[in-house]
Image (cartoon, rainbow, N blue to C red; front, side, top):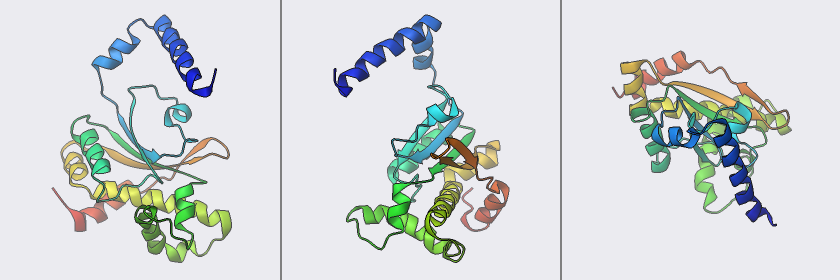
Length: 209
């Protein structure tokens, strides 16, 4: 049996185990979709949010792309964000990067990657904004710091959007959190972004109520 066929064998066993514990497990999830979390993470196959958080299906609405970006011209990303806030009524938006991110590493190299350059430019813009601080570091530590700054700036990009601001003014949520997953140890690091301070600064310039 090859790896592809094993997926279907595992799926059957997984279904049987869930139904043994709860006969209505799949029916309940089918009839209700009300996650509290929107998770925006990297597409890296080594980073599985339901695995390292212990959350179950139905708990978290997920969007993933290279280097967990929230560009203001990505209609897919923005549509997901709007749907999560206005329709699913999520209470938390989490931007999660990870140390060892290939997208961040590529963005720090003086090398062209063709079409991918357009995407990596978002990370290079983060590098430009935080260059003075980043240049204090070297090697892997410098990459790690850019991963963190990238998460911070993507949190800012979420807070800039009209759907976020309107919901927060009306409801007091969602709140935005920045995480970094450390694949070297399996732990999540909360960057403890100053959400209220960022929101106040954003509203002075990007107020879209």
